[in-house]
Amino acid sequence: MTEPTALTALTALTSHPLRVAEVIAETPDARSVVFEGAFDYRPGQFLTVRVPSDRTGSVARCYSLSSSPHTGEPLQVTVKRTAGGYASNWVCDTVAPGSVLEVLPPSGVFTPRSLDADLLLFAGGSGITPVISIVKSALLRGAGEVVLVYANRDAESVIFAERLAGLAAEHPGRLSVTHWLESERGLPTVADLVALASPHADHDAFTCGPAPFMAAVTDALKALGFPRERRRQERFASLAANVFERAVPSPLTRAE
Image (tube, rainbow, N blue to C red; front, side):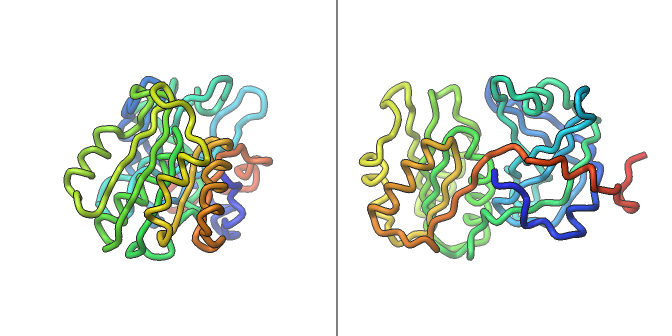
């Protein structure tokens, strides 16, 4: 994910404790963390979470909000375990109901200009986390077509499989979901992605996933003439600095 350069001075300096209400096993290696607290946010944004560390005291990690601000559902982030990734493994193995996590308010610019716009969404693996927030929000509050292409290693790796199937059944005229499984079809090529995107060349495009996947999608969209202003990407990346070193607890939300 892009580093939180869009944080305001207040956001960057004010941290908030959020109590965990529930942890949901989405797949064997992905967990959704549901919080009791609430923030104002936009679909596609992320939370910056303080993760304790024996070596450095703590590290800061950005996790996309998979909840929607428009559905009434509680605040939720979804984290996929990464091989050798300290923070993601800590979240998946340690966080439980009753845990209190220190966070910075939601931030990020991977957000639709309008929920009424026609949307072409590409997600790879855990890249579905900000994308499903956009999907749910657009279906509830928008009026446009929503097209999702979701690539994964295999069927077991598909995060939110049942939820996506339910949304597609509830909105048959507005939401279409194409699952691309590497175990069955190999990695999607630029030509494959051009074929999937070409019927929707007038849509606003959003892409989140592994770097090679996003590069292929970008090449496909450029080949189809998508202008830069209709192409958004979200890159997952570790922060270069621990922003919590400069943060102070919010006096209004400090946990007991």
